Image (cartoon, rainbow, N blue to C red; front, side, top):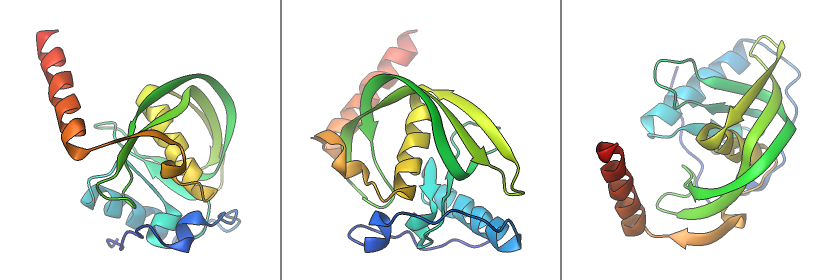
Length: 169
C-alpha cells in the first residue's frame, strides 16, 4: 500500500465521467488499498478514484469507528428520499466548505472488490458522504452544489457549538 497524491482543483480529471470497472484483479485491490490509506493520511472520510488520478468508478467512504470501510465499485443510486442541507468539504478543494443539499436516505447497489454485488442503505451523514463520492465518479464537483459558502472560522464555531450541545446531553 502507498499514499498517493490527491488531485486538486482545477484539474480536468476531477470533471471526467469515470469508466465502469470490468476487471476485478490485484490492480483494483491495490487501488482500493492505496485510496483508503491516502484518505486516512489526509484526514478524509471519503475518496473517489479521480481524486488520485484514476478515471474508474471506484470510491470509498470510511468514518465509522471499528467498522470496515464502504468500498463502492460501479455504484448506482437505487432509492432516495427526503433532503437535508449540511456543510461539506472535499480533499480536492482544501479550505473550501459550503452548504449542500443532498438526499437524506438512500439505497445504493455496488460491487465488492471481487465483483459480487451488494446493496446498502444509508441515512444522514453516511448518505451524504456516499453521494459526494458518487458525484466524483460522474465528474460532478461539490462546489457546483454549494448554496452558501462557509469560512473556516464559521465552520470552527459551528463545531464548537455542536460540541457544547453534545456535552449538555
